[in-house]
Length: 212
Image (cartoon, rainbow, N blue to C red; front, side, top):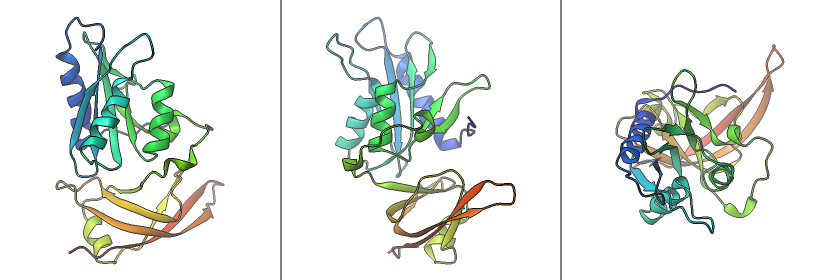
């Protein structure tokens, strides 16, 4: 499974989770911290609530905190354990909830080479997807100049490998934009193309709302 290196904004999320985890004391009911970033660059923090009846993990509490703040779709999430345990991956229940509610979120996970990002769908492959979740979709762009190109309609298509974006409304999120500008728009078409090496890519065409 290929992991993505951490961007500057993703590193902020990991650091926020680890910083909050370091403040947790000896209370066995709160042992994990989570941080999640929305498309506006805001970070929402939370801790787990352990209980024998099945209290929520820190990631699920973070989803509630973000929703309370009107965050909309989340782009990155990370969790860290108390007592110096560092970054920890989400459990199966959290993976399913993230996939259904935030299908384009990237999850920070520990690897032998340090923290890395993985798309949530890669952490829960071949799983059931709850269609009634009606989650808002995100189309990511990494380049620093992509915002102006997309906003002025100089760029109206993009090639994606191994993603699951479909036709419909979406938020266009620009990872390299330090001010976290976004655009609302619509993916108008998805065309699968085969490459010479036998792999496939999707050609997405889209329109965006004209920014004011």
